[in-house]
Length: 252
Image 1: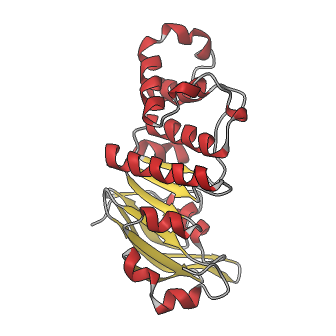
Image 2: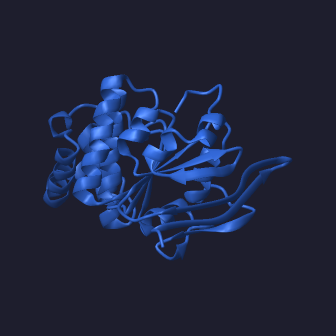
């Protein structure tokens, strides 16, 4: 049994079968990539996993509990965090303030709007935020505002905000989209470090095959809303069905 078990998921939008009988098992403490050509159903599947879309049939279980029908904050409380294609940070706040917001939310249940004003008195939260920023190698940038950073650093900051919640599963939607090569390589290393140090399970949707083959231990290939094949990266690379699915797309 995996920590995330997807069984018999079907989803139609009018006449379009977006997902057809999708089964997926993500084992604890592994990195599992979901790849496929454009229109394969990757984003639809991710939206089902985070409770944004209710499938027509099938089940999604996380650690034995159903995810379906739960609100986003309930899913987060279960131990699932999602990282979006565009980093979700507070652009006008400093790096430190960005990390303090989830620190307050985790401690107090809901963020108190006067919280930032009295932040100097919150020694324990300051220390927690600094520790996490150090972990993602952003402590030296703690006084910078979110809007002034590179895309790679914004992603690093978003990861720090996620780690405050102490997730057991990270769902990553194209974590290196729009990045320069150096930022991409740094993000790959960051994800490797987080996985090693925290033992967090990761499910990644990604177009960049360099990222996929650098991180994933298992790969599921979707084509036209259905799982085509699931295997280790070595076997996926030369799989004839995978090459066929990607014809006209970036070659695997």
